[in-house]
Amino acid sequence: MWVGFNPNKDKNLVRSDYYHKIIIPVYIPNFEGYFKDSFRIFKICLESLYKTIHQHTYISIATNGCCDEVIEFVNYEYNSGRIHEVVHNKENIGKINSVLKSLSGTNETLITITDADVLFCQGWQESTYEVFSVFSKAGVVSTSPGSKSYGKYDAIFYWDYFFSKRLRFTNVKDPEALISFARSIGNEAMYNQVHLSKYLTLTNKGIVAVAGAAHFVATYKGEIFNHFKNKFSEYSLGGNSESLFLDTPALKQGFYRLSTSSNFTYHMGNVYENWMQEKLNQLENRKCSLVEQKKYLKIRGNSFKFFFFNKVYSKILLKRKVLLYVLIWKGLTRKEAKEYLTWSLFYTLIATEI
Image 1 (cartoon, rainbow, N blue to C red):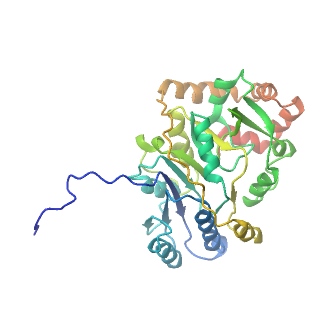
Image 2 (spheres, one colour):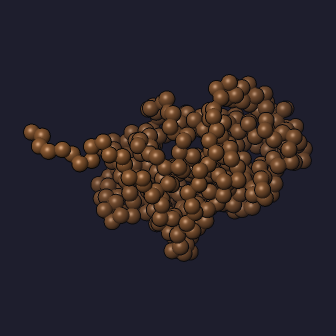
Image 3 (cartoon, rainbow, N blue to C red):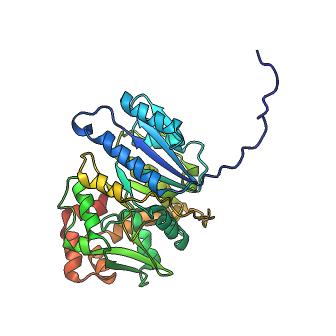
């Protein structure tokens, strides 16, 4: 039986004060083997966020087939008001599918999608906003710059700035952060000496951004996800899921993938190490200085340009001989350019965009 009239019917929603959403998919089915330290690392991830974000930040946690202890912890954080949204999935539906659920009904200007093993440092939000503000075509901004984070999805840089000195190889600000990332994924040989000393950067109004963006932590303009055609990923992790759902939508709308020039986030991996707690302890309990919400330039996508850049231009550009001369043109010596390209993992990354 229905009695009375719902007082909320036909009323507009009150505009939310939140304009930056952070989505964290979590998969910790147990505390054994690979997942032995995952819960502890996830807690460090959250604590680092609490210490570094401003009050208009909305945290969403999506659990995937997590064990009861993790579920109880997430519910406690939600009930205490430290996180704002919880999406529980009884079974593991995969990283991207859980992110898609958290994106549903989202209206925030900026959306950060991060793995549950990332440690955030002070200043990451301010630096992210700075890149978005200075580079009008920025659609994706990572706070972990790398000398291998750009590839076939970033051919547009060379088209827009091929003859400009604003796009050049410059000195890496924090090579130790690159070494730390390589260790965190169990591949200490990932970077050679040239990768640790030079990365491709774009400069505007005195602000430097690094070409390309990592998948494990990146902030996206919310409008990128407004026109999703794909609703489901067949992969639990990897495959083409991140390129299809995170890279392609931005590229179709003509946006750049960039990173801050300094490192503000650390990938911890699945094994706890003392430095993680030490870095967390070093963080001051100082929130991000409040940044007024800005309206960023909207760019209209062009299907022909997307096809041209990613199916034609990038294939020509990334041919080994062509790319060698492009790298030299953009500031590397011939020896350095050859070292970039003879480092097999780098060339694999460029060709496949892992």
